[in-house]
Length: 126
Length: 126
Image (tube, rainbow over all chains, first blue to last red; front, side):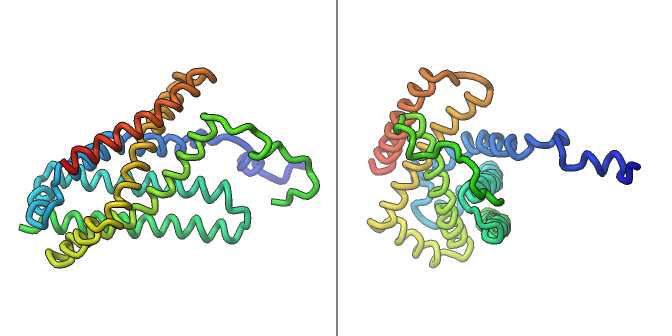
């Protein structure tokens, strides 16, 4: 006699049509970092961070601040996905792997939030 | 996961080093280094938010020989990861995935990364 529901039987056995989400997110955040990162590096090369007043002026521009916040989000998201793959590939101890994955999640969210707050503070300071 | 006494697939040391494997391993290494680099991004943005004095201290560090050396390393990692990332995106849409093209594009990744890094520092320092 069948004691399990159909759903219970198939759960975990195959695709739920969401398997590509992480793969796709890694590509899309990477794609976003191409223009955002090149913009940021070009600005640095152009001497936008030469002194405090210069960087404040630059970050106070709504366009720059928007790009900066988007860059921060894309970078830390991409970093989270990349480091996760590295840990999954090389850390074979289950407990250590879990701890590392949690640390990556918390760490990237913490640093990313700090960066966004900092960028907003300097950009919105009159 | 218990691996027991099962046969193993051939591992890294079996294979002859090739341009494709080299480019791939470097992609991972530069990605890891860039992830560590986000700590300095956070330090830089944080210093800005904390005010002119903190920013001046950060500037002093980043323009010291050690700071410049670190910045140079990251710029090289960034441009390398950028070039090979674009190569990956081409593969993801199904282009250039035959052996001959991957070997050729692998060489171009090195060329592109070196040219961009040199160009960036040439502009920045002139």
